[in-house]
Image (cartoon, rainbow, N blue to C red; front, side, top):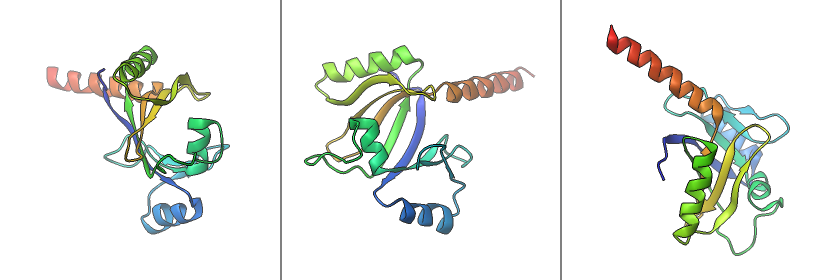
Length: 153
């Protein structure tokens, strides 16, 4: 397994109104609501490729297909997504973790917006995504090409 970079990080909240108040109103983060969801996000915050505030009910639906987080599982407070080089890299990384005895919340799948992701939960409750988001890799390639041209001058 070889993650290329941290693609996303964020908090998980059981109270979206309180989360919006803290992160948008009080901290001034430029978060926008993702269409057809309650997920707040930005890719405009320096030092982060993508930061989000994910409602617990939507995290539960993404991981378990239900709006309720299962009893007996730690309630997550954060998520992090590690970007793989390709969708096939997500599949390989997920298989590698399962072979090492990790139980995935869900196996690799491609969401309607193009993200390929598999998720697991740590014993502490953190949701870790193995992910491939196409637009994040296009930006990395453009930045790498600009840096290479600047070095050759």
